[in-house]
Amino acid sequence: MKGPIDRREFLKLAGVGGVVFASGLRNTSFAADKAAGDDFYFVQMSDSHWGFEGPPNPDAKVTLKKAVAAVNSLSEPPDFIIFTGDLTHTTDDGAERRKRMSEFRSIVADLKVKDVRFMPGEHDASLDHGAAYQELFGATHYTFDHKGVHFIVLDNVSDPSAQIGDEQLAWLAADLKQLPANANIVVFTHRPLFDLYPQWDWATRDGAKAIELLTPHRNVTVFYGHIHQEHHQMTGHIAHHAAKGLMFPLPAPGSQPRRVPVPWDPAQPYKGLGFRDVEAELKKPDYVITELPVQKG
Image (tube, rainbow, N blue to C red; front, side, top):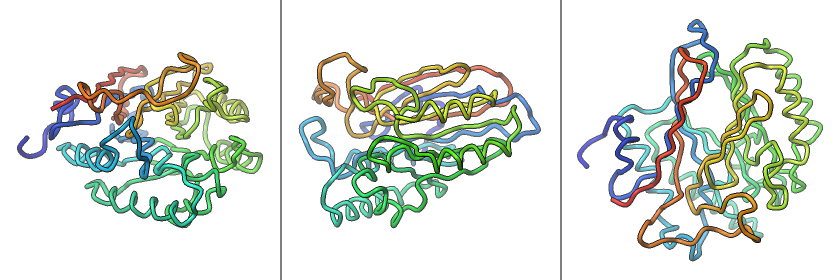
């Protein structure tokens, strides 16, 4: 394919250079206050598991690089990109963990969008409470503001017991206290905050406390990873959206006895893998959601 292509056409075609990682989500849930800022979009990528090797993805050494190339093929760059955890695949070897993180950082440095943000997954952080992650990427939880939207990055993985923890919850409460009830808020987490399927570690033990803190605010949306598939759920008025992974898909919650990766299908390589386009429009207070599969070129 010659030259960059229009982002909307990209989402229609779902094909760049033989493979593509595309799941489009137009998010129009943000408050319709034009004074808050201009329309914009960002890209959510998740669960790249750099360092993974195994039958579920025989293309593991190039999958992340192809995802980077796909994002770079968009003619209209996103305002920013965020990786929602499990940047690398777990290892007991601290030196190898840092090596994988360094390699991951080197690969994603090729992204044309220079505003790239990160957060850890349990594969990155649970074995050393986030020590290596913080050395290479900085804070595991933080906030930032962009065009009238307040973004909150929560760490529910550095504690190996899958908790946010009282200290971070107090930090969240203090941050939210400064915001009006109608503030536009987007939360990024790795694990789901609600009990999606605790038997498979698809929950946060004190996630209900975070949801309770967020509930007084009318315009809250949560984006997370961890479960390697699209999933949408409401807790009251708060919408939660899981992203596909970049390395291997996982089965639907509780659909089989064990949580094991979906087998690789040579006839449909990259099936179930994807990234997400999130478009914030300030005109309509509703969602138009489109998830597109990875397609063979």
